[in-house]
Length: 312
Image 1 (cartoon, rainbow, N blue to C red):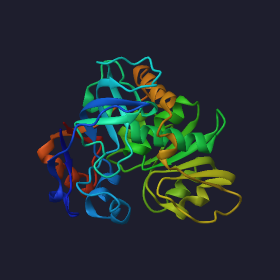
Image 2 (spheres, helix red, strand yellow):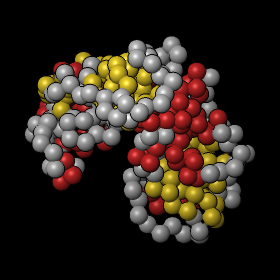
Image 3 (cartoon, rainbow, N blue to C red):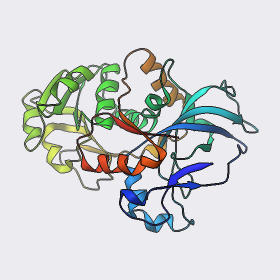
Image 4 (cartoon, rainbow, N blue to C red):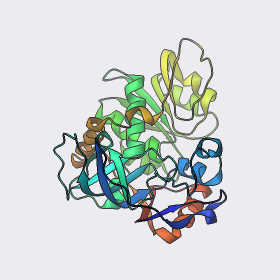
């Protein structure tokens, strides 16, 4: 099979099309013929050497990718599932060595795979698993009661956008940030109140939640600067491993999507919410395998709205 990976760490041009052995579905696994894989910031760390110490336990090539969508090709021994060979599926992938989303075939734990939303393209479905499950985990960790208020920073981005939509589906009031150019997008995602993003956003959030919000999802990675926006004893969901002692009894939740790697029910719940119109799939642009480097280049330049997807 073909895959996209790196034999030597470097910039976007380090990505190349490589050949790898076809995997098989082992016990407890499903084999997926991948047709689309979404590009995430974590993928750039696999490529540029930021994770080199971890990766050196395996020989190159190193294949990035945490999301995949395609066709179920085989079901391993011991798997109990209502999925059938030929079904269109989506999956979350833990990239390790040559095993990453940018592969034409993947053998994955059955709990990492769910049926695609009805009517979705492979590219659209591939945008759901990693960021959708990360947002789901963040909100589950915050555990804000129905009717409570959450703030979301980086709301126009992938993680932030899912946080807005899933929080609304949970019956929460949402205060989200946006630039002037992204304000309508964030409103369309369902935010009740939109404040201008950037320095001082905590104070702008407080104007609409004088006692502080019950929970905050920090998609913009502003970290401690956002603590003033949270009520005493509220919650802060950090997606980049922030390790600080928060003031005023604020509970810190370090959100690692690997905890939901095999939570198939949660992935299937996202499928249902897409079909119900509660969650939006946003594809900015697709790329063939030999242009994966351009996808990484655009992602690192910033400002992409929607997801960049590699078609395999």
